[in-house]
Image (cartoon, rainbow, N blue to C red; front, side):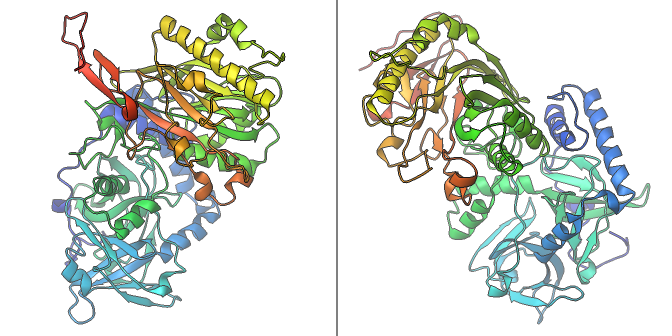
Length: 629
């Protein structure tokens, strides 16, 4: 805001700030600062555990932005062109239209046919039906005036102060919408924000100076920047032009006569939209289009978001650490990246980093990798704030096995002692003298802690069995399956931990090759049901098949993901030339859920083998008797 005396409508003041917005708890805020600081000041430490460290990192962020704030030459050259692309999607909203104007606001395209603005700009369908959006209302641009179409889609929320309304005009086809983002860690204190707006209904303007973020709350952010009446509904971006907030109010601080603005965090709006869609109350094409456009993930929630751990009665989950009292979980995946060796191109490293970042697993078993390639991958991931590490098992040739893990949430220790204990089994040979395991499995103990009240502990086994469909190769895999079943039985008796086995088995489950694993009473093949539905994980050529699997011990509880327990992530359907440029396999992932302490887990039977019942054991009891009728 520039003037305290302005009386133009649609510019709420301090009285309009969200009363339900709360400060983040210290742990949540430390995690956010730690993640954002990696992009700018590259701290050595992983999880930020103390207030002192958090303040030090914030000071580093502040110094970084003070440096670039003194001159635009410290910003990348694409800053202006990227900003211009975002600007094309911003429009002036004439509330009530030409005949009975009630004021002006700002809005922007979020999909081809949907515009978002504030609830206090477009309160209802009746007002929206008479209002006009004007794109290109700026010097040198062709003005595109379109009528809003609430009959196509209309959704509003008074508390979060947003309205999404339909529009329909082919002239908008060339405009790239602004993407809604799930990630709540796109900004922290002392960063700069940029706002594209129509202040006082003037032609489009941008504020990129004196724009420091002052406070992060669970649903809003506060920042200093120049806005005026008419700026309501403007997009608020960080310096990477990522959408972080929807501007909706501001006031002047009498003590220093400086404006303080409030924007509703986009992550809070997206959390509401996802819950609304998942709960089925607004399953229509408009909302589906919005949900489908959200391609990123929260680094706290991962690929599955709140599936498997959500409280269906709670529609306002905006941060993972707010999941107090809900099941603790770990997200686990397996992926054959295909020849991800030391000679790969930077382009392929970038493509793989994008996949890993979007999946946001706690631990991911990888095959066909090498150390130098993984080192480059980790460096690339750090540019977006991901703090990854890996453990590796060197196997003969250039197709090593590794576990890539989130260093903020997970601790991994290689368990070479398990391999040593079963050296004879791992060196077993078929009757024709062929080794069952040309590449030995990787054994590791995993502990997923951050964000959980109780650690999620398990033994993870990553395999890459011999390829080819000849009888000799199948005999190798059959023997490997038998030996793995024996090793897992021993682990279960000696380690007293759940087991997660996965990777590239190079074999389908519609035959007897892996029978020793799939019919062991203590094990459950999560991909068995997928094998009967023509699902595929190998996408390389005409012989596509489901050969990547996850097999778990029956004390593992899998989160219910859209009625299933595991996900085959068909990236080949959403990423162009995926099998040529990224990998001939797609990842297979699942969510491992702990349903609390002191419980007895009983496997189901028949078609419900993946489901479990948890029976609480009373305090002081040391045994339980269960009978089935």
